[in-house]
Amino acid sequence: MNDIDLNADLGEGDPYDAELLGIVSSCNIACGGHAGDSKSMEKTVRQALDNAVAIGAHPSYPDRQGFGRRSGFVAGGALSESLQGQLQDLGEVATGLGAVVSHVKPHGALYNDAASDAGLAELVAEAVTRMPGACALVGQPGSALERAAEDRGIRFVAEAFVDRAYFADGRLVPRSETGAVYDDSEAMAAQAVSLALAQRARSIDGRSINIRADTLCIHGDTPDAPHAARVVRDALEGRGITIVAPVLAR
Image (cartoon, rainbow, N blue to C red):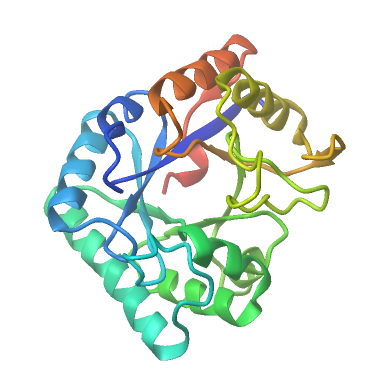
């Protein structure tokens, strides 16, 4: 692979957004479910535009208290209404600033739940179809979310993580477990290069596993996130990999 996207989840109240937007090629902006409001959305969209970074929505279970990390927090019509409202809110902010929302990436527990729950994945995909234009859906490769996107003709962007550990079956190790989140920027860089060049990562038990990736995520709440992101980007570019967001472009 000669190019890959580098994304970050932003607008969540962390102090590194402006610095990260000078490094990544796409961002996923919290739109009120777990974090964010009209002011933070506007600020992050403006900063993304200033840095020519692709703009995406980062909707969640409507669970600000739990930061969107409580599984199955709400379902059915209530969840559908919330997701559509979150996407509409960011869409209106973006439109007002002359920007386009190019993709949607669920946050936290919603992201993980929709990977294996076909009904939930369909609900998320339905919300994406209501976005203007050809909005893409970002998620784990081989997941129920990917199948739901394919069923609805939505472009799917396979995501892998540079700062998270994986089980041997390709699932992310829960944040509650020791070693789930990397704090070593060199380890992140090594995983990023392996994912970009070979579509492989090392599982938490030491096995080499296949993970398809069109985009690589580094979380905005990772300790010293801008430094880690710069180390990751430099490592990728040092191996001849261009950091761009063509898979998210219209």
